[in-house]
Length: 438
Image (cartoon, rainbow, N blue to C red; front, side, top):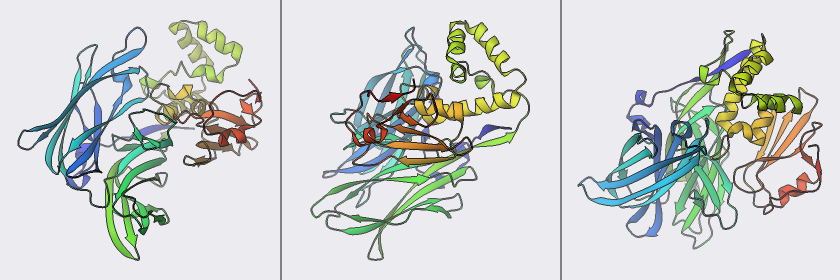
């Protein structure tokens, strides 16, 4: 049996070739920011999108389990003139795992600018500050690339701050991805003034040496006549990464064999790799996963466990695993992956349906994923071949990123007879009378 550890990377080790990575804050609050510039068809005025990402656990919580932090942004020219400033408060449910993500839109002109972002914990005054120098240029035909952790269709009438047209784009402001927890990254980009053109898009993932390790077949894109702006999304497979380091996404557009333009975006990939089992519990922060343990227990055992105080739960936890160190470490490994992969803004990873299944059954042998469709809700089908051809289906029925379990071949698991029909009803999200199991 093996356990896992994250192979960390320090942003400071990268040279000037790493320009375009996230800017990391200084101070007592740790967060990262990234930016992208878009053309909004307003003459010389462009749109600067500022993405922010912070771990929720570092903020203090009140008696209701809520955090409140203040974000302040300013954009100042090299001559000291202020072009934009904004300040707002963000309430969020405290969780040990998960990140708070935001996007702020600012007007910007071509030239050199200094962007300053501060985050302050309202309860205790602790603050972090990130400063980023920007050299803004007109995008031409192609905007900069926004890295995203997921992209999903928005429900009608959505006012989500991450909304872009009919899509909700969750930015990866840290420009950092952990594999295998995040085996897929997504991109958002805009094309301008190419109406009537038929072009090809070539997307590649380049390793630290600049060599291609993943290349998607060229996408044929036909832009309708008269269309000034086209929004494009893409997904890149990170599971091919075997060595941690500085990677980059390269997107090139061609027409009739001629190159129209190319845009690159750097990112950091870290590995969550197995190491030999030392026979000891992993890092103290995950030495006991008390909240997750009831998922492995019977209903009666779980009810008893939840009635215990913290000291009693710790004793029960230790007695449950006993001398089964390898099994315990495997459970801790799965807990870490679930926290990294399935946590959302308002829900810890183990509370999600996919997180619960992963904790109980482990990594699926195969995942069929369909995140983008105009006729179906986003869904995933997990298959386990080593345990009797069992499978699970999850769907984002509400378009909010919460994948609900709608089908399983495992006896006693939630399963709906009409689960395939539920995928087609993209506007639905209510319950059904055809549930099997509990």
